[in-house]
Length: 265
Length: 322
Image (cartoon, rainbow over all chains, first blue to last red):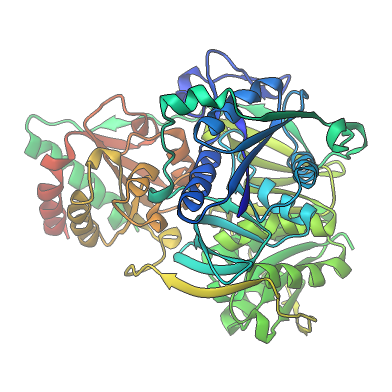
C-alpha cells in the first residue's frame, strides 16, 4: 500500500504560557526562543503509517507545505524510516490558510502519482483549525474518515479504519484511495528514531518543489479566511489555597467548599 | 437567501448542545435581519422538533432510511442538498465529533469558509467574525470568514439558549432528500464505551485525573470519589495516551469540551491545552501537590496536597456531608 503522510512544522506547543508572545499588529505568534517541531498529530499519523507498513508492507511518502526550514521535519520523518519526502516551499509568512494548504497538498499529491491512502493529523497545535484533512478530501474527490487511531487491511482495495467518537469508537470500511485524519491514541505514540536511521536520513530522497512546480499560483487563490485579531487573554482567577493546621483540617475545609458548591446545584 | 441554518443531529435530541446552537443561531439571525432555519437529519423526537420550532422561523426535518444512523458521506450529502437551495449566510453546528468532521467539507461544497471551536460569532461588515482559542489556548484569535456561507462549529454548550417567549413557533416542514447509499464507505460497527449516567459533555460535576496519578489503579479510587459526588469521570490527554483510561474520557483541546458547574482536577498540571477543554466550567478546583501547577491559575479554590493522602478521607467526609 502506498501511504502519503502530510506533516506540518509548527512552533513548539509545549512552551509555557508565560513565555508565549504574539505580535498583535502582525497577528502572528512570536517565535522567541521556541523550537520548531513536527505537529504531534502529524507524528501520530506517521506512526500509524509506520505500523501499517511494518505489518502489511508498502511505501510511505511524507509531504509538507512550508518554508525551506520545514525540511527538518521531513528529515526527521525519513529518520523514522519514511521512504521518501517532498517539500512544497511556501515562504508566505503568517497564517497558513487551510484551503490554500489543502489545494497545494492536493496538487503535490497528484504530482507524486499513485497512492492508496493519505494520512494527516486531525489538527495542528498552532492554529488548530482541524480542516486540512476534510478540505483535502474534497479537493481530491475522496472519502474522508476523521479522528482515526488505526488502519487495518480489509477486502482487496479496501481498508478498515478504527476511529474515536464522543461515546466510544467505530469501525468504518472504505475503498481506497481515501483521506484519513489521525488522532492520538495509546497505540500510536510516536517512536524515537534510531541513530543509524538519523544518519541515513540524509541520504534518502527529499524532493523540493516550488508552488509553481505543482501549478499553484498564490495570487489567483481567493482567501478562505483571515485573522482579524490575535491577542493573549488576560484571564486568571485568584486561587484560594485551602489552609489548615493538619492534613485532616485541610481535607475538612476542602470538603466543605465542595459541598457548598454542590448544594447550590 | 442569506439566512442562518442550524444543523441538529436527531439522535442527540433536545440536549444542551442543540439549545446552544439554536441560541447562537437566533442571535446571529436577528443581527443579520435574517431567518433562522433549523435542519434536523434522521428520525426525530417531538421534544427536539418542538424545542427547535419555538425559537426558529422554520424547522426542516429530513428523514430517510439512509439517515437512520450517522454516516459521514451520506450526512454530508444530505446537508449539502438541503443547504444549497437556501443559499444561507451561515451554517452552525455543534462541537460533537460528527459536527466537527462535517464542517470543513460542507463549507467546501457550498463554496464557503469554515471555522471551528467558536466561542463567539458576530457580524462585522460583510464578514462573519469567529472568536476561538488558538496556540493550545494560549491566544485568542478573531477569524474573519471571507467566503459565504460561514460554516461554524460552536462550543454549543457554553452558548446561551434562545428565549422562546413572545415568538410564534416556526413552521415544521418534512423535506425529502434524494440520497443514494455511498458506494465507498460503510460503517461496520459502533461501540459505546459503557459509562453510567449522563454524557460527560452534559455532566454537572466532573472528577478528572491526570498524569500525576501515575497509572490506571488510582482511577478506581477517583471513581469511588466521583460516585460519592454524583460526578462523571474524565481524564487529561496524558492519562488517555498512557492507556490508563479510554480515549473517550479525554478532556481538552482535542478531547471533549466540558462545561460543568464543578470540575475537580486531580493530579493534573493544567497545560493550556487541557484548560481549553474546561474553561467553560463554572467552578474549577484542583488537588495537586505542586503549588505552582498552572491548573491553580484557573481555580476558585484548591488544595496543595498529595492526592494519595486526600482521596480516601475526602470521600468519607463528603459522604458524611451528604
